[in-house]
Amino acid sequence: MATPERRPLTPEEREDAQRLRALFEKQKAETGLTQEELAALGGWSGQSGASGYLNARIPLNLKAATAFARALGVSVRDISPRLAAKAADFFEAAGGEQTPRRRSQSAVMTALNDWRLRASSRSVAVIDMLTTLAKKNELREEDWQLIEDLAARLHKRS
Image (cartoon, rainbow, N blue to C red; front, side, top):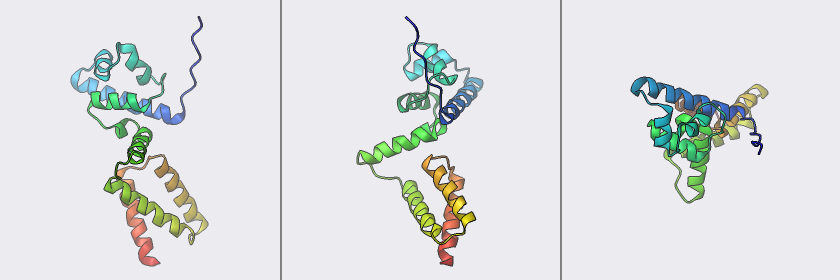
């Protein structure tokens, strides 16, 4: 029986795999962790379970990212900001509360989008880029701080 064709990973999935691989390599250098041990910690029956994710043959899903995060002692966000955002959305949809940081981010993006209506075409392009990155959950904490500072300055001007 022929093995079914796997779909190619998206660029975001490849980036997730690269981050996972880097975190594993760091842990391996520090503690001697092997792929087999990582697989066991993640709940897979053998080294090949971890290998498929580490070598970007299998796209990470939320369950696998959570297992790897626990096994490596990191957050899901460290492995996949995309999946971390999905987990946060699930949590909120299930009736969980937004964290103060997510409430702040929502307020900042609302302010920027309001300001967008009065902005130059160049500024609109920047706001659109920031909005896209925010939706993909690709902004770091220091990015959010800069955006908050910018939004505060823009608010003072209006």
